[in-house]
Length: 149
Image (tube, rainbow, N blue to C red; front, top):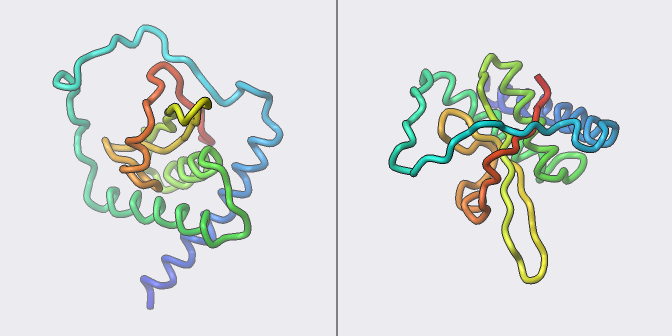
């Protein structure tokens, strides 16, 4: 019963976070939420070091919040864009004391158009999104989104 209450509380918190994120995107000036990384040298995949593993409790909490945002995005009051979902998840993570998450942006070519997608990465893993779907996009290395912190 307590677990069910926790899941419902997370989904309710996710709905409010999604609403705040949607309002932020509607009112923020274009480009106000992005930052460009300067001086980041490209390295081979073999040179990338694994981030230190977070405590198991933090990993479980982060996954639960990701699931809550994902569920609420499908079954909640509205169907938010991926960037709204990412902003909401980052806010919930920060409020839960889970820091150092990043909102990442990727692109892919689809016919004659370019499609973009945003997701949250924390502790070396994708949260609140399907990693297989995310892998279809080429990550834009020098841009990240400033979340609600």
